[in-house]
Image (cartoon, rainbow over all chains, first blue to last red):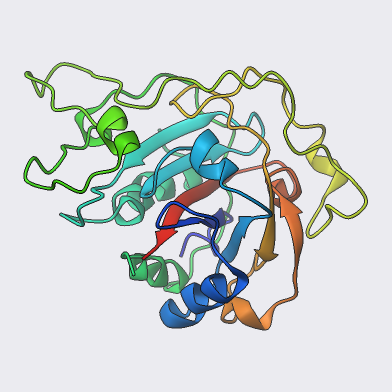
Amino acid sequence: MVLDAGGVIVEILAGSAGAHPSRAELDAWVNTYRLPVTTVRDVTGTPTLATYGIRESAFVVNLETMVVEIKINGSVAGIGDSAVLQIIPRMMTLLRGGM
Amino acid sequence: MTRTPALLALSTALLVGCGSDPPTITLDAAPSDVSVADANDATLEDRALQDVLVPQDMTAPVDIAMTDVPVAVDLAPDTAADVLLADASAGPYPPGPYGNRVGSVLANLSWEGYVNPTGGAVSTTRTYGPTSLQALRGSGRGYALVHVADFY
């Protein structure tokens, strides 16, 4: 839906219990959920966690300015909708030219 | 593992068209951007405690994001190897200062993994290699959804 609307999706497996995730963990992450989106991990360490924030942080970024337009922190306790589910409708509004 | 099956929903339905000119950038302090910590969860990481507040007044705009990370330089300069899906038409990566709040410029980080811009197949069927946020900008038009996950 988002991809077909021209959006870009980046799923970052930023940690494994806070540590650097292995290649095997990245593969398991993709295969278990059959993710059809760009899925990546840090080359070493956990700079994504240090720079972007904790898990369940979701951002909508304007690709021209790279400015964060929307940010949602989902519950790290797994309560309620995930950050992705919460942010998709708002991203789709932007992709359709809305505010 | 933590939840991400929500990402499966992204591959459904067919919609065509990119966004129009980007809207005016404003700080988004809507209540939907506020997450409430589970007070009974004793296993929250320190960063979660810093990043999540329980405002006394839910109608009051609260920026619960982490303090801007004072990154003065581009953390992932483009190199010849940093080219899974690089597109020169995106232009140079915007300068900092960088941060992770609404209104901040997100820092250009380098990663490795599966670049899958079309979503036509499970990503492990794609080539594994280096990439970066700059490389993933494509034409520099539209919007990107960036999600931070943790393997459990």
